[in-house]
Amino acid sequence: MMKKYLLIACCLIVAFSIAGQKKNRYGMEIEKRTDGTCKIKKQGEIEKIIDLSQVADLCVPYVYKPDKIQGSDYEKCTTKEYIFKDYGTYSLSMEVDIPSGMKGPFPFIIYVHGGSWISGGPSSFKNQSQYLASRGIAGIRITYTLQKNNGHFEQGLEEIDEAFRFTQAHAKEWNLDMKRFGYAGGSAGTPLSSYWAMKKEGCSLYIGCNGLYDLTEFPPAGNFPGKDRPYLRFIDSQEKAREMSSVYQIPKKNPPAVMVAHGTADTTIPYQQAVALCDAVAAKGGKINKLIYPYYVHAFFNKNASDKYEEITMEMYRFSKEIFKLK
Image 1 (cartoon, rainbow, N blue to C red):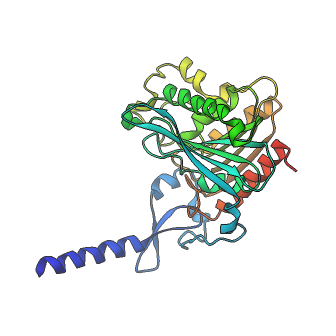
Image 2 (cartoon, rainbow, N blue to C red):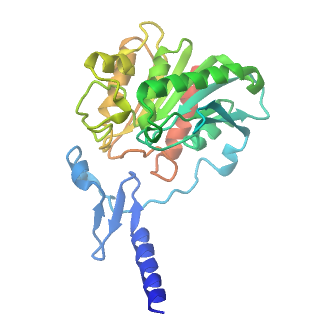
Image 3 (cartoon, one colour):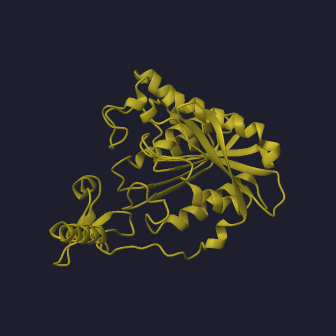
């Protein structure tokens, strides 16, 4: 009986703890105290790069409620699942969001997930991909070998290119337009996806959220990729790091249009990385859409993460529609 009561007590403590952990509209994790004040997770780190005393609504919890984007806005597409590479002990999958009830061939975006190279999969960017697909822009959501399977950066690049070739082989079946395509990535997926956006002939668009585009800075200004950097173990010189960094691989002529979304309170990857990529693309005559959000933290672009999810998703569509010249 005593064990039963202890178990109930523990469950109540955990439930109370979870209930006390919320996010404000900037994506910061907050914990309200009984005296009405609040504690911000990583507050010390954040205050090194931004003045939180200017944020009046720091302790106000935020809960996402659909406003301009409703459930039906994701439904005008069909999703297919594939394995595009099988290693035997594990495999790499993709999920393909194809517009339905519309005339193709469709432009498409290859989405590359984040997760610090230790987690993540094709479900990342599902909401954004299906929103765009329901408006005529197909989405290819892929994964790559993670650190748990001894993955490394150059392997990830090759796998993303294999996903492109797999897509190319199925272009007719999926009703895709191989002359109109782009890449998108979030966090750890941005150095991989942006590399191919700059190197792949014919790519006309890149979208990066909370992105890392210059691998030459070591130690990094933010917390990622960290000091050990096992995923980057074969990038062992400044010359190699420069070769793998998209900010140094921008085509001299007709670079892809670039949209970035980044928060100034991002302690994982500094927003200056996004600014540097945009400035480099603009210097070569490329079109840019630089969305820098004061006080927002890492991963704020995701659904339920902050109040900017709908705004950024809709802007991804608007910008892609313009670049792909959709009617």
